[in-house]
Every structure is written in C-alpha cells, then in structure tokens.
Length: 135
Image (cartoon, rainbow, N blue to C red):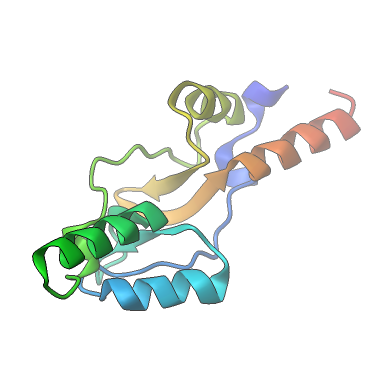
C-alpha cells in the first residue's frame, strides 16, 4: 500500500525558505522565529540552489571567529550537493532514502523549482492513514 502513496499526497507545501545572499545572522533569526533547524535556499526564480542548516551556521561562526572576520552570506556555507525527490516519488522509496542516508527531510522539486518538502513525520502520517484505511 505504501508503494502507491506519492510524496505529493503528504509533502509540506508552505515552506520557510532563505536566499543565497542573506546574512547568516538573518538566517539564524529566521530559524529561531520559526523553530526550525534548517531551510531550503532558493534563488529569485524559486529554483532550489542549496540547503542551509544549524550546522552550517556554526561552521560560519567558527570560521569567522578563527579568522577574525564577519560571517559571510548563506551562499558561503550552504550545502549544494543536494538529494531531492519529486511529487511522484513513492513514500516507500523516501523511507528507504531516510534510513539509508540518515536524512530527516528531503526537498521536493519539479523541474528544478522547489515545490515542497517531505519529512519523517510526513511519512508517519502516511503510514498512520494507510493503517486506518486498512492497508
């Protein structure tokens, strides 16, 4: 049953995003205000260009402190080697990725544009709904 459930059925569509030119300090404020640990980085056209996390913030702070400089923009510290899925990817395939790669969430893209995010919690909702439906 889970094989037939698609990411698009459970992904979060309303995301907090940040931009490559944003300051790390501004990104930190966004994380704290929204109680999130990371966010997709999108360009002006909505294309996914990276992911920025709490770890990336710490990396920036340590580098700046070590070199006695200001923390640079998000683009200097964001992860750009991205693993993504599409809305048509099955929930079961995403579960396999999460377990194999120790991921908590994945960006969902359509033609390179960010359209959502799927998380472990979303998978649990899908599993619960599937169980409730008898399957």
